[in-house]
Length: 191
Image (spheres, rainbow, N blue to C red):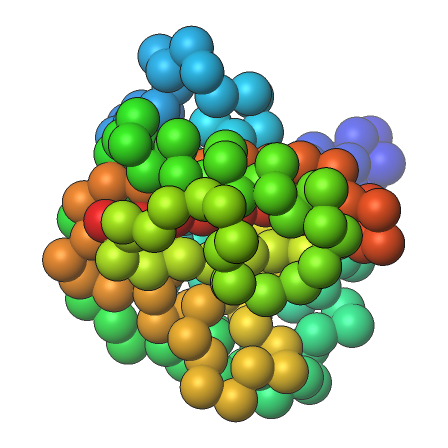
């Protein structure tokens, strides 16, 4: 009987400590769920970006939990620590919505970057027209892309983080593609 009570106690403790998004939060953040042009992971990229923007404290608690094996490496990392502080103190900002014009810009540049295999924001053939741009290298999952851009390790200015969490942006285009050196990359064009 003691074993049953112990297991029940562990189960209750686990469920109380398990952090999850509410259905309402996910629904509000998933602004691109009906967009046919986007892949599942491109939609997830927008959803996780919106979760960080709309619910920063919850994002820290749920997605950046240092007890999560994926984040153990970052637990003492200064960029991770500063992101945690930013999310803990920032005011929520508006969600971002899919925009076909921004998507066309991201898609064009994605093709150009794939062919050239270069890093950076310099466009040769593709037009500009976006207000801000983030590029993630090495990931093809929405959550990983957003976490990389938010942590912004090695970027002294924290420009990707600031752009992702900035007020005033209303629309986005996202394109994930293969990369010859980094396996994957994602372009996020904001307006």
